[in-house]
Each structure stands twice: as C-alpha cells, then as structure tokens.
Amino acid sequence: MSTQPPPGTPPETPKGDRIAKVLARAGVASRREAERMIEAGRVSVNGKQIDSPALNVTDTDRIAVDGKPLTAPEPARLWLYHKPAGRVTTARDELGRPTIFDDLPEELPRVMSVGRLDLNSEGLLLLTNDGAIKRRLELPSTGWLRKYRVRIKGRPKDEDFAPLRKGISIDGERFQPMIVSLDRQQGANAWLTLGLREGKNREIRRAMEEMGFSVNRLIRVSYGPFQLGSLKPGEVEEVRRRVLRDQLGLEAPPEGTATAERPKPRLRRDAAAKPDGRPGKPGPGGKPRPGGKPGASGKPGASGKLRPTGNRGPKPRGR
Figure 1 (spheres, rainbow, N blue to C red):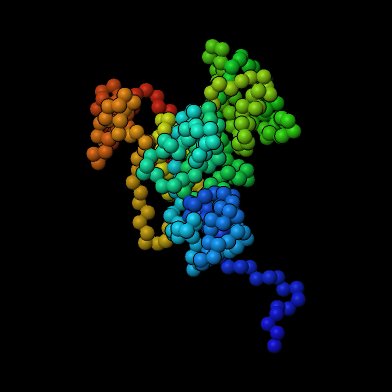
Figure 2: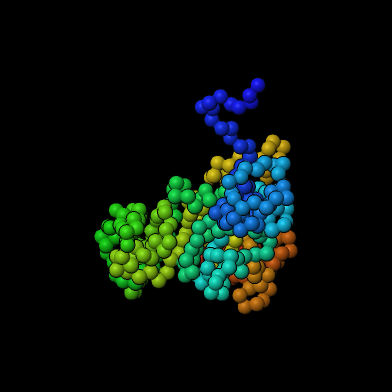
C-alpha cells in the first residue's frame, strides 16, 4: 500500500523552530547575524556543519557554534542604558572608536542593543540578552513612540515644523509624521521635544537639516513605556521581569517558580570609584556606591540611599 499522501494534501510543517531563531533566542546573535554565521559555516547540528538557515531544530538536536555546544537559553532580560555621547553602538568599530560595549559593567551577560544611537547622540538605549525580543522591538509594526530632547542652532518658530508634523520626503525616502514641540529658546539655540515611531538612520538630524537647522545635541528620553528618567551617563539598570512580561506579553513563569524580585541596582563599569578616582561610600551589602554628590545633608534617606540633590527628573518606569 502506498504511503504517499493524497494529492492536494498540504505538506506537513516541520517540527521545532528555525535554527536562526533558536540561536537568536539563546542570545548568540540577532536573527540576521545568526543567518550570516550559518552561511559562513560556523554552526553545526548533530555534528554536521550546515550552510543554510532553512532548517528547523528541536530540543533534542545538538547545536554547536564555532565548535562550542549551545547552552540552554536564559530567561529573557532587558536593561536600560544611558549611552554617553562619543560611543558607537556596535560590538567592534573599524575605525577603532570606543563602543558602548567597552563601558558596560562586567556583571552583564552577553547583550545586544535594540536599535542604535548615533555616535554623537546620547540617552536611553535598550539592551537585551534575547534576539527575539531585539527583533520584535525593532520592527516598525511595534509602533512604540520614541521621544527625544533635541537642541538645534537657530531661532525657529513653531510653524517651521509643520512639514515634519505632516511627514516629508528626503532624497526619495519618506519620513512618517513626527510629533514636534518648541520648548524654549536658549541664546543662539532652541530646545525641542520630538517623538517618532520609525527611527530610520539619522532621521532627526536629516529632518532638521531639511528644515534649515543643525542639531548640536540629541538625547533620547524614552522608548515606548521605558524612560531614561534619572539614569546617569554610563549607568545600566535592569527592567523587572514582571514589567517586561506585562509590556511585551511574555508568558509568566511556571507555577511554583519564585517570582518575587528585589529592586534592580544600577550598575556602571566604574562603580567602585568617583570621577576623581576616590572610592565611593559603601552601599547596601557593603558594595561601593557610584560616584556622585550626596544631598544637602549628606545622610542616607529612609530607604538607606543617599538623598538626591535638586530635580532628578521623572522616576523611570520599567523597574
């Protein structure tokens, strides 16, 4: 008797997930980068080198990258990072410029950036250990609003930005409508608050140049529900997993799994020293505090943290 399916029967869907997706979920690389690694012959499945990402794998398959077995993926995690100006958002730079990964705390696992900020741009950058989350947050369909504080040279009027609010085309490339508000004039410069949902390469700088203005400072202050708040340049703070699940619709951990989370401490690579090189005061658990000035009294507050000085901005969400 023939075992062939009847004519017109759709082919059976292979079990498992695409190999590039599995590698991305394990934090090896983004999905696109994983595909390039496969095509370069760096990945093997069950002892056999593969050169095409058109392959589904299951939990029973043995996967290796550069000869090293793929470890089980860690739970998805997300961090808020205040990128300083003068850092490129790549793992390696052909020109030898400093990268954000040169400055990240050693306690962090391997992470990938969600999108990029230009060399001279600063502010909120999201980091994740999960390639699937990276891809999801970068897709235009996610539609999260990204807000920026922008300083431009000149004395603009509010009506100057009407074309940006409608959407413009530059060199044949269409830019979606932006949210633009003129906040204040400061000498020869003006400060704007700007929101967009796309984030194309140098979109804000190119749009301002088209309007006749040059950007001399650009700070991203929020990415969807996640805010820069009082995070200082170089500081990293992990988003609570419960918040991450709520915002991204991720599955909750199995019943019986401990879900209580302690507040996530802020980290930075030079956390043990102040800017002048002097050690910081011990924080909770005996760990050195990052450099910084205490409040007017210089005494810890009720929570044990040093009281802040002045207005530190809105409390960041995602903690």
